[in-house]
Image (cartoon, rainbow, N blue to C red):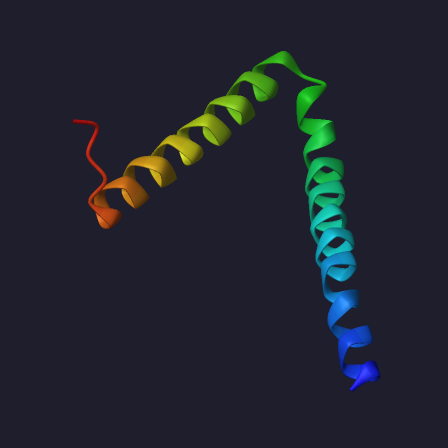
Amino acid sequence: MEDFFNNISRYPRYLISFSLGIFFSFFGWMKPLFKNPLTAIATIGMLVGGFVFLFFTLRAMLGVSTV
């Protein structure tokens, strides 16, 4: 039983390291796009547009209202 709780306690550390690895990989891939101002503006616009699309899609799917 002690081994079970020892293994369970390792999952948060794994989740954090896995998430940081994904973010570092993603930002390393995006870094060359920010060297040119035109591609930097386009990249930022696409990222903001993607987050806005995701926000409104989830808001509509979950039925969240502002009133």
